[in-house]
Length: 220
Image 1 (spheres, helix red, strand yellow):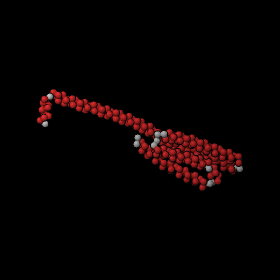
Image 2 (cartoon, rainbow, N blue to C red):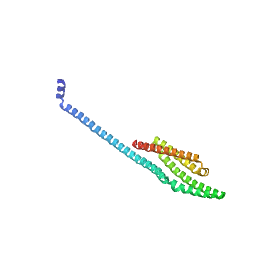
Image 3 (tube, rainbow, N blue to C red):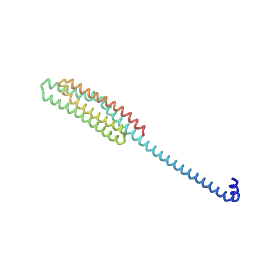
Image 4 (cartoon, one colour):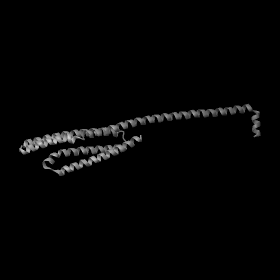
């Protein structure tokens, strides 16, 4: 230690300069390292901000699409929940009246005309139903572009269920002439049971879809 002290004492200005240089270099390192660190923090913050904005936009887009999908499904149910009383019963009553009157008077031409008119009205109802099914399929295909695999699978399953429901409804209405004329209660019960089964399945799958959509949104 004494030797080091003697060396420093002989050239104090040199060692003062050396220590000053070292301190300057150290301060420079600390300063630039701090700046680099601050720059990295700014970049990270900007990246996080951009990611947050992107996620918010994706969330809003998906939430809007999911809401629109269920609004459309609900509107279909609301439009048709009174169809049996408001649409079908009047058509059925008119057919029964015309057909029974024709049968009583042995007027085969009138009976045939009543049956044809009834079938045409039922066909129109069925056609309108399949048009609505086309809208559901279109919305399903649109949702699948951004939905998770789980949501996409449920959307496809529900689409198939609705397709089966419209087909079963069309069959039930087409069978009404046979059921009415032949009093075929077995066929009527079969059709009703199938529609009930599909309706319950649709409700169950819709509930699963709502829950999966919530999970999908939370994971954004």
